[in-house]
Image (cartoon, rainbow, N blue to C red):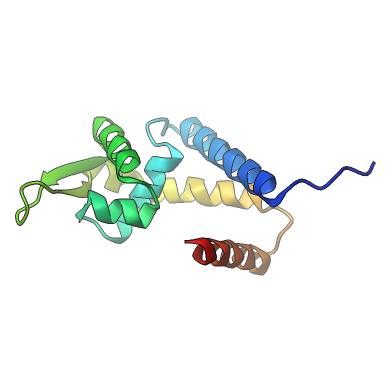
Length: 143
């Protein structure tokens, strides 16, 4: 059967949406329903550099300020992050991982790795690395 090819945006959006759904289901099935894919993205950045401002986090996660504020609010309610007033600027807050988040981050990494392995089944590690490189390249071209 010959199906018409879909636009690039359709394919990219479909993959992104399905991957996020799969990751959310995998997190929930392993006992981490309180961690959404968006929360996981934030935790990955905080694991790399903890105690940063909302603005820095928004830039790193490619989220607008309103979205990152909403995400951080949910993460605070789920005891994943701590918001501390900045010592140098009383209008600003520093965001850091909670003790709970630090205690589960390795498990979350494993779950995401398992999700990626399933999604990239049939591709060898070099192809996966190249796929990620190409997606980063596309992002950098339009950022």
